Image 1 (cartoon, rainbow, N blue to C red):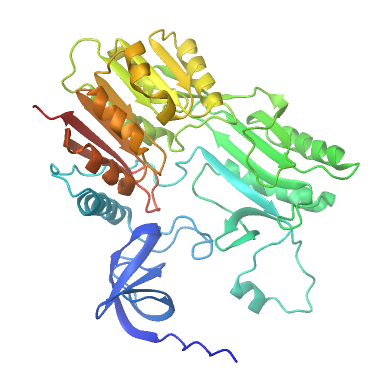
Image 2 (cartoon, helix red, strand yellow; image 1 turned 60 degrees about the vertical axis):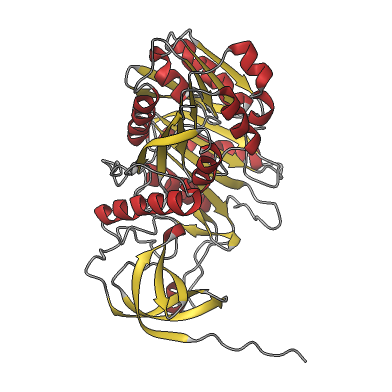
Length: 479
């Protein structure tokens, strides 16, 4: 006979005091730290605990006793169910304060190094419709909220189950239907909803993530500051007529949305939605769009990485360039690590003798070379491969000791071997761009024996989310 778990307590009349990672809020009850979603500092609530450890717990609000004076109304009808934009109930100036505090706390608590005064965060001019890319899943299992289930009598005919939207956290095979997302230009809503409606009216099957069957699988929508639009639809062909049905949908998009300048599709038979290793098919237009930044033009294909907030990416790269060349001599040699499609490398190339970019993804390196070519830049070199394998003493002997290293690693940060090689290379300046201040702080601690941090500039790329970019400038310590 199994012993029943003791029910977790209801905490009453609790004041929310702070914001935490992942968009959650914090309450303190005696020595217990309680993490709660969808709250802001100043809210007074009753919290039902759902998980409890020795010194922290997680719970959910079951009743608001008093709403904070800071709180604002959510802009999105999907708030509270969709996992995105968790901070939209916090006014934007307050979001910026919390993000700067997050950077400060993580650099000090994890890095444990001497820091200069951290600059005020650079906020995004656009707080709505700022993204240039969104991806939507398709599923034959539509997520229904409790409100929907309570309001819809069981005798009423069921709505079509096929859904297009975002995955529900903790339910990988369920999709929350998204009617209106404010993160991208409103045309993305029209395109997505048109695909959903056409699929329903034509009897098209939606993908079953558990059974790995069904035709309509996922959608990617991109736009650019050159007013170009790209749409990629993923299908999963099984039946004899699947390709005919799929091409009817593609023709519907081509006829309905002349704004789409790059319309592509792919038959994905894999167990996941990644398509970097698949052959894509062009239905209409070109296989790419262009982004403009200063006097540069960047080619962006369906497999390309490009910062998803175009205007704020420009601010981020300006900070990186300023930090890199703040006191540089004439024509320094620059290494751009984790260069992606060479955006930063090409952006700073006019200030350098040569820029050498390294990136793991071969397709991204090909894009980087093309971006240099179309902009008439001839002082860049790009190499594809694992950073810890390529960046070694032999590579540095062959290409020269860098005066400046710019590094923009993924969320996991830099491999310790990469950090060790950077220290051996002894560049005068390191500019570390990070989307995760926690792993950045860890790496800064490794660099601290040989480098000191002189400047820290947080940049907000993603309003209404807890995510923040941070740029750190380090200079070599004098012996």
